Length: 439
Ligand SMILES: *Cc1c(COP(=O)(O)O)cnc(C)c1O
Ligand SMILES: [Zn+2]
Image 1 (cartoon, rainbow, N blue to C red):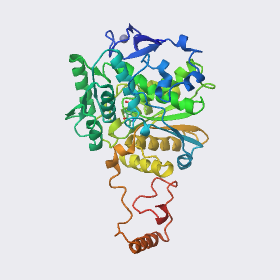
Image 2: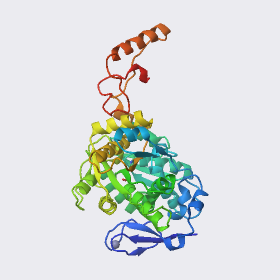
Image 3: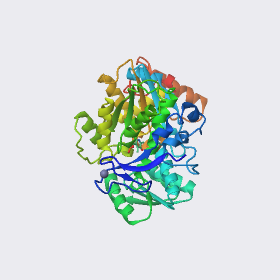
Image 4: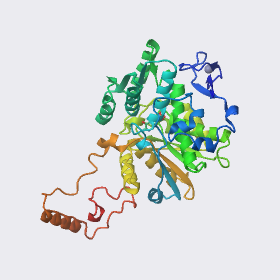
């Protein structure tokens, strides 16, 4: 069943066909995919979804790709992890980690949006895909293009983390490093998209591409047993994932798949060095002031976010708030998550955990409530952020005597000092070695 009606302007409502169009020609507003919700009520049920594939495609009727897709078939359905130690450290009753750091195939939630965009590009007859990226999108698009047998052109800021560059190059796209910020890359992408017959996933395919983010929200609710949590904390770059998780919850309400009124409050998280959306929400204004990013959280360093206005609306509509984290707080939070729950998130995950902590401290998230913390990428992609914060406890020659002596020294060094329990505080390890019993 084709459930897509076409596109429509978010601002003026003008209708457009199901085609690669970026903005409304009348008012330059963004375009949204329109679905036949009335035909879906009662047809898409908890049972039909449960009987679907073990991937994001179990929600196919609510995604803009019709029929079987040959690309990205294993993306999504990542773990929602019960996180009691993190909950205790943060001071809340119930915390969950939605962990897209283990998303197939490139370890970030970008696989969801790219799977939809590349499948749609094929459906629309393109043979070439392209994007401007802060890193995770580049590797995901390059991987999916390789799988689809399509040509890929990728534009990146030249100062990107080496791991992210390599993570795209391995799939052999045409990669163009641009001397400038992501916002420069984005502007250039729009100009190229106007002049070449390419499917620019985050330009002329953006209405479809962003819909892929909804699957992250659908999964949270399904994995909680068709219950929406009290709070969701989301890292924001363009602000799209944040708005689309909210849209996903609203769609599940429309299809009557959620128990009771959802009542979820949506909170935005950004790095202090690039927090234009957080600033709008906290100062309660719908006017975006673009910034020039300076942060280690490069994957979410978008100074002029496309969905800022919508993100602000999402916070208002859901009764949500926002918080930002300094580079030091980001690293502390990455270590806290790793040492409480054994999950290694990239810098964007550090932003989310640090923001969650502040929201609890402010009393926005109450201690008797439930919160889902969104982890959107793997820590192995941003190891440089931790380079001077972790080191071996000791280096020895390969003999038992050397091992015994070293262990003894370590125990002596930690004697009389409180053993640093990883759950106690994110700062416990600062400036000191771990107790010997930790290893
Ligand atoms: C792209 C990205 C986000 C957020 O993206 P939006 O543009 O706000 O949808 C969050 N985390 C990571 C790791 C990302 O790569
Ligand atoms: Zn319009």
